[in-house]
Structure formats: C-alpha cells, structure tokens
Image 1 (cartoon, rainbow, N blue to C red):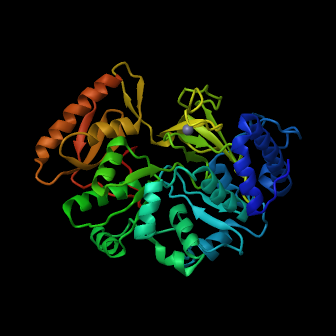
Image 2: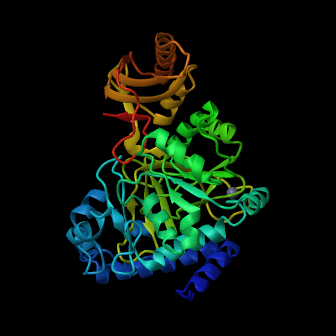
Image 3: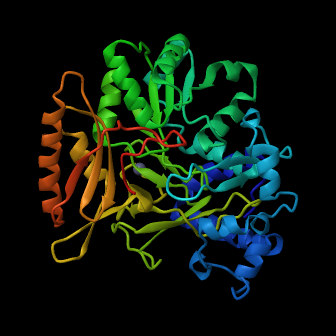
Length: 459
Ligand SMILES: [Zn+2]
C-alpha cells in the first residue's frame, strides 16, 4: 500500500481508511508498525539493543517488549534517531528559553515537555511528518463533530478568537502547539492567544474581557474557575464553543461550564506522546485512530484485557513519528474498550477513558487488605456536596485524607466540612474501606507547578 508522504497523500489515505473497514485499518497498522520497527532498529541505538532477540518480521505489537518513560529518558540520546539531538543540547538551546516557545528545533522538530504531575517529566520530539498527521487526522476525523453548523454560523457572525487556557511556564504541549499555530501568520496570531492559567485570576478575567474569545480551549479546571467568575458578573464573555483537554472533566463540571457560558463543551483525549490518539464522534464516544496509533489496554502484569474490562494501564504506539520512536509505551491511563460497534458507524474502536493509573488512591480495609478507589469517584462525592466550591483531597496514609476546601460565598464552612465528612464516611464504607480520618487543611486548594489543578491524589 502506497501512501504519499505529502499532506495530500496523508489526508487522502486517512479519509480512505475510514471507508476500508476494520480490515483496511488493520492492514495499514501492520504495514506502518513493521516499517517503524525496522527504522527504530537501524537508527536508534536504544531500540537496537532492546530488540536484539526480536524476530525480523513483526506482525503483532505483542511480539515487542514494552517501554517506560523512566528508562527512555535515562537513555534519551540513544532513543532519538537523529544523532544531532541530545538532551543536553535540547535543554540549553531550546527548553531553557521561553521566547522560543512553538518555534521548530533545527528547522524541523516540535519539542514539548510533559508537566510531570504523574511522575518525572518527559521530553518529546515530533518530526514534521508526525505533526502533519496530527493536523490532518483531526481535520478529517472531526470534520463533522468538532464544530456544528449552528456554531459555524455564530463564528461567521462574531469571528473566531480562541483563548488557550494552558500553562505558560514551560514548553508544555498546549502552549507549544498554540504558539506554533500563531507563528503561521499574523492573522492567526491575532485570532489565537495564550492565557496562562498560572497568572492571577483577576488579570486573566480582565484580559479575557478585552479579548472577548469565541472559543475557549484547555484545562477544564481553569474553565470551571472562569465559570464562577462569569456567574459573579466579573467575567463577561460569550464563547460559542469550549474544548476541554489536559485533565478529566466530570459530568457536574461540564454542566457548570455549559450553564455559565451558554455554550457546548467538547472534550479531547490526547497526550504529548500520541497527540491525535482519539477523535470524538457525534455520539460523544472517543474512537482510537488506530491506523496511526496503537492502543493496548493491559492489566497489572501487562497482559491484554478483554473488551469491556477496565485496564490497569495502556501501552501506546505512535506510527507517525520516527525521530523518537514511541513503541508500546506505558502511558499510565486506565481505559475500557467498547464491546460492540458504536452506533455512529465508525470502524475505529471506541474507548472510554477512566483516568490515570498513577492517580489511583488506596485505603486500608478492616481485614488489612487495600481498597483501591478511582479519584474521579472520590472527587465527585466531595464536589457534589452542597457548599463546596473547589477542593483538593490528598491521601496522606492508608487511613487519612487531607482536604483543602474552598466553600461557596455565604456557606457556613464548619457545616460544609461536616457534610463532606458524612458523605465521605458512607462512601468509604460502601467501598469496603475501614475508618478514614479526614483532616481539614488551613491552606486553600491550589494549582501545581505546571498550572494543572489536580483534585485527588496520593502524597
Ligand atoms: Zn462513535
């Protein structure tokens, strides 16, 4: 199968893959995996060593060993396939300089760092082909879902002004991507702007009032904060569409954003390693773009889990990027593949994202076992207590949870604290956990170094 490497060839093939059904997609995946493995073996010293005992002909990703962020970062200079790239040079020539955000490195690479909220930060290099695939896959697969006709008419009327609510303090994917788009033309640079969520809220509100964005995209935690500002009357914007990414969005959070701004919220599930891993269909399901990315849900022993069963973590492969091969990379997310075809008719498998494995919290049961709890479930119990405006819950031991609470204006703090304690008590009992002591912190909830606002984690 021939695919031209230019944008038209990729767009054509990406469009045709949808029509070829599951067999056509599998054929593309196998051919691209074989090509990527052969290339990684010849050009990456790290993979050459790792694949020493792997047969020449690869037909199934399960023939290959998995890789993890830590060992890849420790072997960074051997991992990349362009010998001109070293981690030390990247750090001194690009990453230490915020004025170079979104600029290509050596004229052809886009480089991003992860925030490290779930462990050590990674440095990820994408070549031009990888980036072309990302842009085209999004355009082809989300052509009917990203923007609806009624929203399109609103954009024609009010113009497109996009506010990126991302962290500006480093080369994080959101800001690098936004700045790289802005560098394309002065027209785009005026239409798209970064509003770093690390800045004081009052300044952010004032600048958004001046800019009057019609699109909000980025961290949903920032959108939730802004939704409260909009309700208070301090923020006065009328977005047509909000695109949430980078963090999980709860159903209550989504409803709060939609109610405050009177616009639809769409979600994107992506990561710096596999930027166009999924596309959302008109039924709201996330479909894996499995002609360009491989997603393998696995259990704690890295064995495949059946469809319909929630995985412990997920291994991903990026078939489009050759400068830094990502092959069976442990991403750390818990996912569930759908058991049947999606009513939308897409031939791509639908997947449900449950959250980060690294974020799981466990508490002790009366018989000494550990009870594992999904952060989203625990968070929802607290979030849906009357009077809670914002919160953070930190597991500090098998029987202790530290709470940072911000109560709604006018609410009685002591009363809200008691209500949260009561609800958590019944929740933990229902989960089979023993008594969990709630410790109320004096400090308010706050964002971490990268501007992400985590709600529930283990200290
Ligand atoms: Zn669907």
